[in-house]
Length: 206
Ligand SMILES: [Zn+2]
Image (cartoon, rainbow, N blue to C red; front, side, top):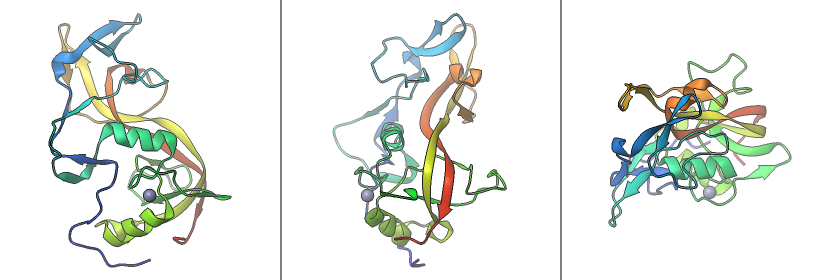
């Protein structure tokens, strides 16, 4: 694996956020009784909730493409890549062989002792060519561990947590990672899809 990194990436990953992309206004949110209260948009669109009923953040952008913010991912594009297992850089199908899909992951303090088995990630998989570019260009590349994952289970989401004040929703400034089925998801506006990496093999970059 190359240790060389560039001071500024030359490739703009498909999932990257741009500085002209704005989250939807708080005024668009309302409460829906199911009968328990949950977040909803006043005017719902077909993709606003995922198949598990979680509400997703909307992203608006102007006509002029802004500058990439490499430290952040666009929620719609991250969701699309993670759900469909597309390469996070080029949006083509991610590399898959008999050992599974190709991910680049690194160990975090909250990871289980079994890491990389059973770890959670918000980073979608990659194709081989883009994984090589990522290792060359990403400032975090020294920590990357290439993995093959046979069973990347849909686990849950991360997003902004809200509290119902009785009149409106108020962000409580936390961004929890919550498993599908957790009741707290009723008050979360999701911005990233999380997969649990199961049946993992540490590999060399192909
Ligand atoms: Zn790619």
